[in-house]
Image 1 (cartoon, one colour):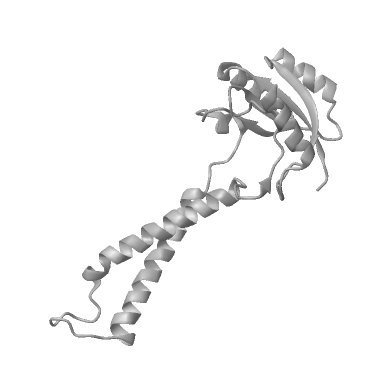
Image 2 (image 1 turned 180 degrees about the vertical axis):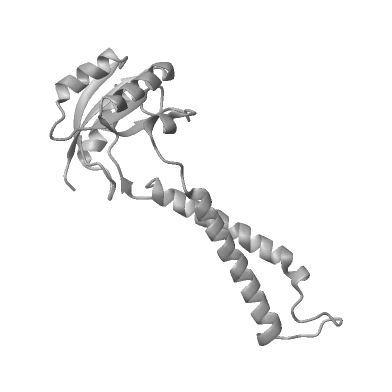
Length: 195
């Protein structure tokens, strides 16, 4: 993958982060992502992100589970193994409700978890660039993607004037890739743990 240039600004308070996000967006810079130590209500709207469609995927997975249960049970009890139990009809829908409900919940839950992991790029052996070691500890880290027109020095000064306590420029791969962390990454992590 080709590496891209990013300007990384670290904030120590969410009250400072929100106005900075609005000013960065108004200035026309492209925010790659913001890493926070805890969920921040309203940050997705401040960043201009659209509403997630995970609930729509959950509905589709649930309908798939319902269809699978009804068609499977219907085929077994009406075509494959029609048994007359106590005079009950072969197509006995009320008796199938518990199994149908359970398969609906199972398909929706498993499907949404797998979809969430795919969208958030969570999986074993996935390698991503970490922009700051304290991003999930106590700092709010805003990562801004630089284009050909972006002056990184002006952007760094802009972030400092808007409350960033730490600003740096990094060249990193924007996506994720399969693999383990290299020896350089492991050495950096080991020295930071020791220090």
